Length: 465
Image 1 (cartoon, rainbow, N blue to C red):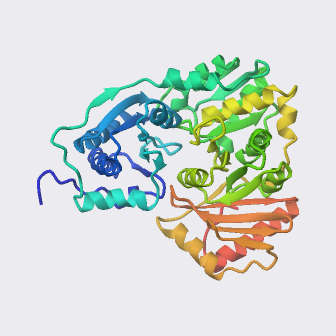
Image 2 (image 1 turned 135 degrees about the vertical axis):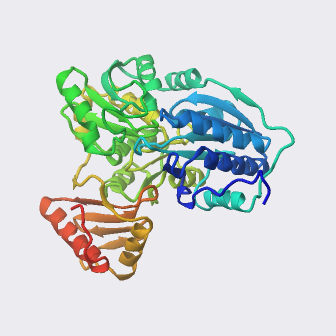
Image 3 (image 1 turned 90 degrees about the vertical axis):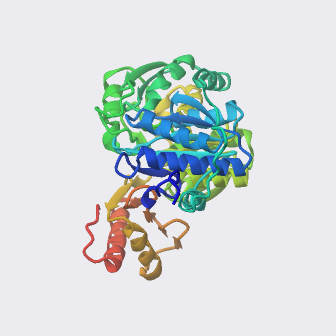
């Protein structure tokens, strides 16, 4: 074994659509350097010459981004360090700087001791087998060792990013909005962006602090939106936004404190996009409301349900040429007027453009079709168990009243008056459960049906509903 061969990184950090793990336990600088070397080697084989590297506001970011850059450069590939920026700005940098490739060093919405890598090579987001192939490269020592390392340079893309949005998105009137960045990296950009758009932002936790001292930066969880709800009650702001830790997801709250989940946000976005792209295909993930597909159809669009996962949805968007896609988690992908990557800040700008044309933003949001539904419920299990539980559900469970059982991504059971979903998360060892129905009685019945089915294949399980 040669002395310059990398130690094999922990296999469990190679996830379905990114690399992620606990810093200094499994995600060490040595592991990230090895992954960078594999990524740089893959970039060379794909004819890529440079990779933009950005990082979120986590405390481990500088060390890990440095190790990543060392690894990439060892393969002879240049690194453009764009600093501490939201993940969407890293994606933007790949377009703006013309390199086509980028890595965001981010733990997204995970706890402070996590970090990870979201990777794009030549415009293709790496996921699944492509991520496993990096692991194989390291194991096989199938790495390019350049005679001279790639160059390291820095670039600032923040102004270009804000200019590009402000040049395209126009508000019909100024708006006063609450923005909660949860001490995530969106705080570096969001206040300036929304001011430039003509808004007056009420800023909450916009100071970037990787220890997240106020609340967890995950807008998909209602408990993390309580500060926004309070600020809307106590000020004359008419709308509230919350961003996740790396700024690629958006949470929306109405003036009177109602959370507008992303599948309902997507209704407004779809209506707007279809007004300019007649017959356009709109992609959404299996967690979204059953009211979304009819809404899209009624407006002349083509609804397509797809797997959950930002990389998977992005790949489907690229494959279909659809103008818009969205996920229940808050990832929105605009191809119309934008680049097709998920971007919470840009989504917020587009939502303001739509709502500023309405006299009453609150009424416009509340008028969107709604059902009784649960937020995402997480059944915590040991590593590997969520996939096994869902596999058993697919094979053995019977849902007698079901109109349709969709096994695209987990098990989604459609009833006459609602749906239930159980799918294994690709980022943490949980089964994600979600329920929606036309009435409280129907919701209870569907949950009871799922309870019986899950307990039947996994006796003794402690369900979160």
